Length: 146
Figure (cartoon, rainbow, N blue to C red):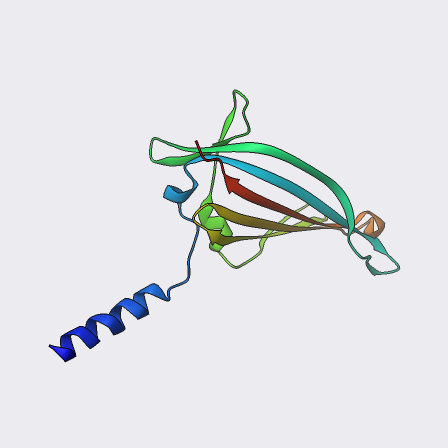
């Protein structure tokens, strides 16, 4: 009996220690979110320190339709939401006509009612390096309790 109890306790502890992730099921509902952005410009051959761009607040609603997760900012238009992109742990690189953009997305589970996303984007322009930009956008969301 002691072995069974000990085995169950060890199993419970191991399962309970797993990394918490934001899931589609968790996102469904309404969220009060704070958006903040920063930008670093290209100066003297390197990116400068980040400077604040904009801060804003707003509501985001997530919902499922035809087995696809969508989000909406309170307008008539909804957009598909690719949650997997936030757990990919790599940069999405696109190149076109001497312009390269790199984007890395992360999502952090804070609690069942809180999460944070970060999106880091670099835009590099071959023939105009002074136009290079690096932007960091962070969104912190709290579930709206009805």
